[in-house]
Amino acid sequence: MPSQMGRLTKLQSLSDFFIGERNGSSPKELGKLQYLEGELSIHNFQNVVDVEDASESNLKDWLGDSSFSTLAKLKLYGSRYCSSLPSLRQLASLKELDMVSFYGVPTLGHEVYGNCTSNEKPFQSLERLWIMLMPQWHEWIPCAGAFPRL
Image 1: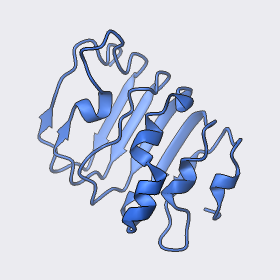
Image 2: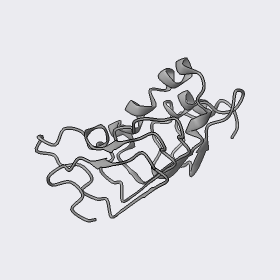
Image 3: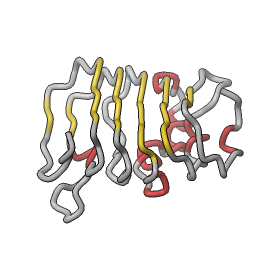
């Protein structure tokens, strides 16, 4: 992945983003790509070793930003040390979601789909949900009205 991807602020299509080690692409570059649509795969979350870099990216908020509401496919890979998932509620066009190698995530619930008491229900377009390699996952907190197409 070339460094300084964030300088391509009008980029609309990016199929894969690899978080690099030390001198590679950092997650904060993703926060600047507000016009992405279609499909995006984010790899190597485990390479986020600098806490400041991770907080600058504000990755959890970025993925749930309504600017990315046209993403149809999202694949999240390689987060061996992650204990929570980002909010994806605002991704209204999301049809396919893959979450792979989130080894430290024990629960799927409000952190992913937000507050279930609102009138707007999350994941109305989602047709496929694929979860793999999440050995600590033991609880699914349901949200009434979510995932009607699964």
